[in-house]
Length: 296
Image (cartoon, rainbow, N blue to C red; front, side, top):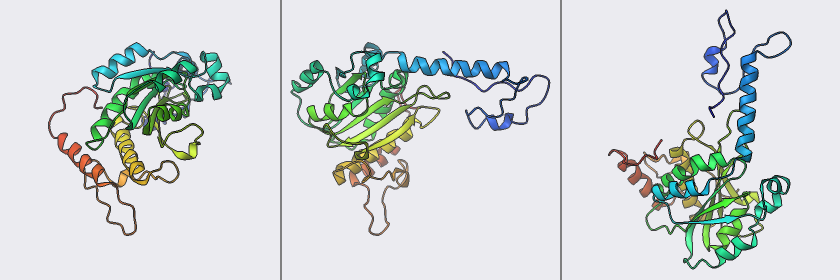
């Protein structure tokens, strides 16, 4: 289904707002026909509403997602399910989406992989479309930016998942950090926004104050490259500080991936040297043509 678009100018006249619509997807100066909206604006709104509903109810295609992850060279995947048995239960009982069902909990407890530095979870959330489309390229670009030597755990594909489900997943897989790549609640201009939630020391019972969030990841919002840079910066910072959340501030814009990444401000926690060196290496690699198809 096509993306919603701004309605055309009124018939038979110039639209003085047309030049402003180039800079926003918000519905501005829609005009009117009598006491109602113009037909084009009304149809556009109906389309956007239908897309938002589809985003909430369309299931995650795990087989296709697994193939995409393999093609991108991501770690082998595991599949889990929350305690919400279906979409209706997920929407009515948010608490069930924050805990694994017994079968998934037992499956992860039997995984014999060693402890790792980070586990990535791709979860449907409230927009499976966002996770299906954006999670794999985002993770692939993040892995390119992580310093050498980081131990990355198995990729986890989660259905009927809320953000806090990552805490139990990360704890069972003995991960130092977990990143939930989860579809955000769709809006009427963006049915496919991906949210990234980083938690250091994941364990059941943590609160949102102990996470860092990067939102609206999609080509029309926060591009993959910029989101991956922020996430790699936060992962390195959380590793150094031993925490995430309100105690970890996103200052990645002070250390651009294609520039000098040394903070000379006095009495300021500088970015880990491992991240600085890796970001410089990433910038150098961009000089040569990139053979992958995941860069925006």
